[in-house]
Length: 85
Image (cartoon, rainbow, N blue to C red; front, top):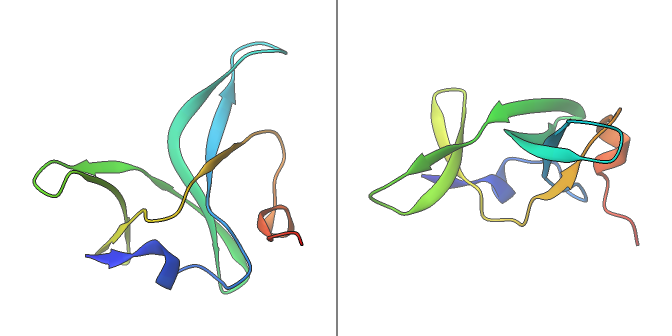
């Protein structure tokens, strides 16, 4: 199993997408948002019981989520996932 930090573009971060329940309330969707080669991607988060970790599947390979995934909601694009100094 690979680490997601080796997959994503440098100077970008992974985020967990959120679903709006009302104007003031959000819940986690179970999807991870990340940037690869300048393109925004969203993949379902799965759980690996033997290894006790969360992962996504990218091109038939498992990638362990080894970075913190802060929530993101609303309209987002590859530029909104850039790490700000």
